[in-house]
Image 1 (tube, rainbow, N blue to C red):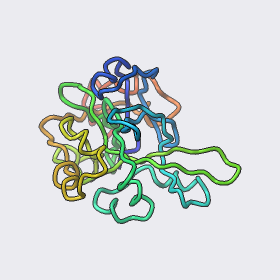
Image 2: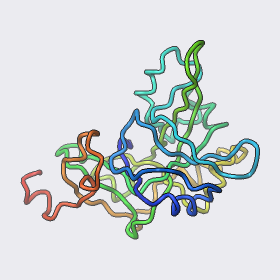
Image 3: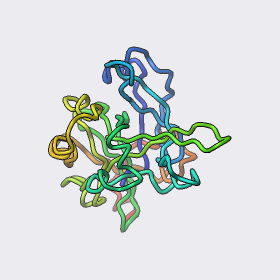
Amino acid sequence: MCGRFALSISPSVLAKLFGLDEIPDLPPRYNIAPGQSIAAVLSHPEGNIRVLKMLRWGLVPPWAKDPAIGNRMINARAETVMDKPAFRRAFQQRRCLIPADGFFEWQKQKRQPYFIRMRDTRPFALAGLWEQWQAPGRELLQTCTIITTEGNELLRPIHPRMPVIVPPEHYNRWLDTTSTPDQVVSRIFQPYPPEHMEALPVGTRVNSPKNDDPACLEPLTEPPEEKGLF
C-alpha cells in the first residue's frame, strides 16, 4: 500500500519537472497522510496543458451516499482498478500524477518505518485517479487515490506492495485517457526498477501524522537492530 509520502521540493522545480505553466504555492510537506489535501497534476480539459489541483486523499465515488467511504479508498490495486466500480470511471476519465520526493512504508513484523526514494533523490510521480462528489446542498468534493502494484525486490522484504511510479516519458500516456488499457498495464503498471531506488530506515516520529517536519525523513545513524528496534 501507500499510506504516507513526502513532497518538499521547491515549487519552481516542481513546475519545471511537470510542465506547469504556473508556479504553485506549496509549502514543503514531510509526512503527508490520508484525508489531507495533496497536490496532483492533471490535464486541463480545455487544452493540452497540465494544471495542479489540491485534492483530498481518499477517493469518494460519485455514487457514494456518504463521503466517509473515502477513508477506505486511499489506494487502488493496479490489478483490479479497471474493473472495480469505485475506480472504473476514474480510470477511464480522470487520471492524475501525484508528485513525491519519496514514500514511507513500515516493515510489517517489526513496525520499523522506512523512507523509500530515488538514489539520486530526484522527485517522481505516483499514478493516481481523481473524482468529484457532490450531494444536494453539499459542497463539491474533489478526491483522489494512489494506485499500487506488487513490490519490487527492494520493497518486498519491507512490504509486499508499492505505489505505481510513472516514469517521465510516460506522463503524457498516463494522463491521456484515450490510451488503451493494454498500453497502461504493460508500460506503467509495473514495479519500478529497484536499482534506481533506496530504502532508508527512519525514526518513529513519522508514525504520527501530527508530525510534519524534516526530522521525519532523517535516516537512523545506526542500523535498526543495534537500536533495539528489531
